[in-house]
Image 1 (spheres, rainbow, N blue to C red):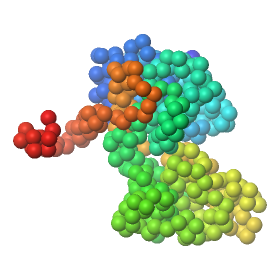
Image 2 (image 1 turned 180 degrees about the vertical axis):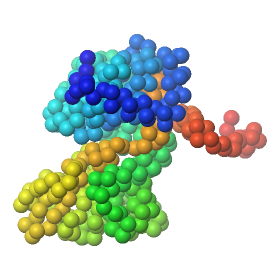
Image 3 (image 1 turned 60 degrees about the horizontal axis):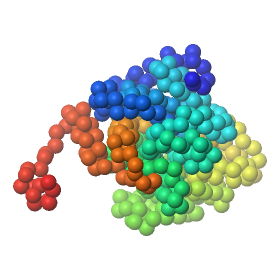
Image 4 (image 1 turned 135 degrees about the vertical axis):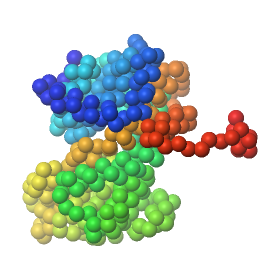
Length: 411
């Protein structure tokens, strides 16, 4: 059973899935082993990640490993209807439609969870939030879950502290293969691809304000500077602010930066980073974008309340006209710009992140009975994925001699 917009779109979706499969060699190697070993035989896996081709490939690999897979999106605007149909045609249970309301989005999540999953692969924490609350009746078979993104990890840590985690969870976002590679290089490239494609404007010479200098913010700032932008970073963490300074970026408060920026990119995982007092200072035709998981980082409700009118100026760009005539442009409704207004991270990037997801889920199956806590991905999984990826790229590295291992105290 699936709920998708139109199964007639399946051919286009399958083409997209097959394309990315050719550029995800690490996950492909895991798939070969999963086919032989069937680590998920007899188990049900619920996947809530941005429903596009790379995610469909992860779900397909889990199915090839024996799982009964139920796939849904993690954001109403990032689901691609042809990919949803294509995944359904490949035998997956798919619940995803682009552009639904938040109420309809939650209904699709609930439909997905009715499978009573053993393993959950989450992106942002919505499935776990439901399983700990209104969908607790579907959590009776849970072995554990894996969380993909920074925002989700923050929500899980809060639940862990409160003692309300419904199952053991793997912090996939904190794995080296995820934050070194995906968050920095994937976000850095895909955010600017999406902004440039959506606006058809130049980046060089503009002042870019990056809110948050974690791994994602580092990537966004680095790529902006590489294209000739003048980059300002805003932060609340003193050491992240120092790091940005040492990398040559100007650091200041958002109150100071608001009047200077041409393009604002929020990458914090927090809410209300840009609010009314900031919009009051912004230049005419400034752009506000968000690269965090949820659409609360830039408070668009504040801007909407200030505006005398709003109009679609270009696909995925709404211009809000303020009483003094200034226009503030919002891309993709303030939702995750690289997916709501683009194709997400490159396939080669998601190859590593989703390889972590697959191996972390397998680790949970092999280590059942864990406490309901948040666990780091074992270093052995990270190292395995790194070496597989290097091999696929034709790169070799040194290895420690036995004497060097002894010197370092390693076995």
